[in-house]
Length: 134
Image (cartoon, rainbow, N blue to C red; front, top):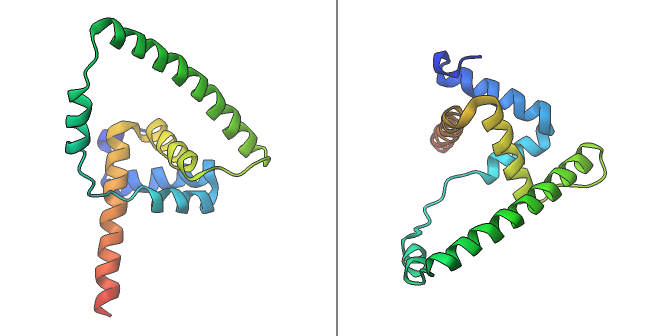
């Protein structure tokens, strides 16, 4: 599958089919509801982070600690998804969002995932406009 040769609608269909195959229709619907874009402005937070810049050795230690933490989180996440696939537990909202994003990225790549989400929300906006007119 060459995503560069696919139309927006074909990308959307391929992504949706992959989500349903891997997550099922219920989790796919939850994922798509959760991934709505928001209007949050990160500018204030970014300035706070930049004001507290540590020195280089501290930054190196922080990066190493984050890498170790990230590896542990990835291992736990994989174990939880495996348990979910076996029917042993339900996923949290953030796990649903992370899994859906990973499925889309694995199937369509980052550019294709962006096109998928753009198409999905464009379709939903059009449906809402149409519903309001009727």
